[in-house]
Amino acid sequence: MENRIDFIGIPLDNLYMSETLKKIEDAIINNNQIHHCVINAGKVVKMQNDEKLRESVINSDIISADGMSIVWAAKFLGTKIKERVAGIDLMENLVSLAYNKNYSCFFLGARQEVVEKLVNDYSVKYSKEIISGFENGYFDENYEQELVKKIKDSNANILFVAITSPKKEIFLNKHKSELKNINLIMGVGGSFDVISGAIKRAPLFIQKIGLEWLYRFIQEPKRMWRRYLIGNFKFMIMIFKAKFF
Image (cartoon, rainbow, N blue to C red):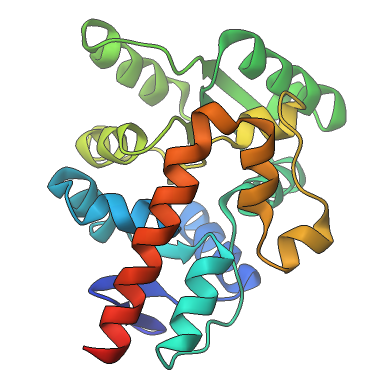
């Protein structure tokens, strides 16, 4: 595939944000489906021991570099990444696109009060017309098939899934054939919490120097210490092995 590179055994699409948006809009216009996924240091580490997660990621149509860790690691290994395409930034661009082009979005994930606030904020900022449906991310297997039907029947152009890894990746890979009428399906992690204001996002200068993870860690140390401290260390070991061994 054009612009696709190999990142330590993981396919990665080396695209600008604008190129990613164009591919997605082309899929909407032509009524095709794109499964978008991002990788960051933590997910790359998890993929080494979780075959279902690995399968879900590599089966995606577009795989973007979500974290600066991926951009820097790729450069260290000899490949320049055009641009970091963070899931949260792509989501914000797509919601704006939905408003400008009369597309609709389904929002799945986060706590009920968070997703409700997100939908309300977007309705005020843009229009209620871009909202085709929403559901919180706390569902069990007994409700899963009913939820998939609800998303399918919404006829949304775009599905955003804000659930933790690997649940969101596995959910999308498992059900994407049933959701063929949805033009874009993508996981957006904790984006609903950030956009709704439940969690603060790092200032732009912190994002640019690659310390967004530290800013998040400071806000939720008990929840994030294993993911960021242990996960980041394991990631660095993997990159050094790929470079020198």
